[in-house]
Image (cartoon, rainbow, N blue to C red; front, side, top):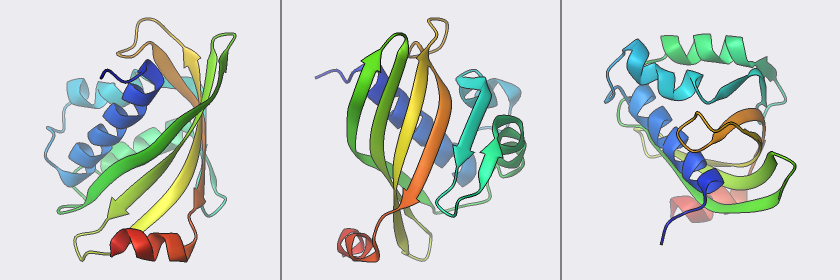
Length: 143
């Protein structure tokens, strides 16, 4: 079964993050374009700790972090579309990360996409807001 474009975009971009940060993708401009080409110029992320990071700062941080997390793993679960209308899509998903030492953390993310046909899945990322999942949920996931 083929996933809808918003779900495909979430999975593919997080696969990119795993490969980029894990160092399995080449550190080239062409490879990094998978991120830059799908991020709106006004993109902002709010981290689980409440830090608001504008797109240009995030792009610089991630570019410099290539290969910084060997043995690290990231995956997506429970993605749901909340609304899709007027060229915007709002979705939620759980983002799970496992560090090389086995530590697992999870966050609930909300993303706002805008339609943009010239991107891999026809969408650009406008806004992401992340919240830590409760410790009990994270412990169950790690078990």
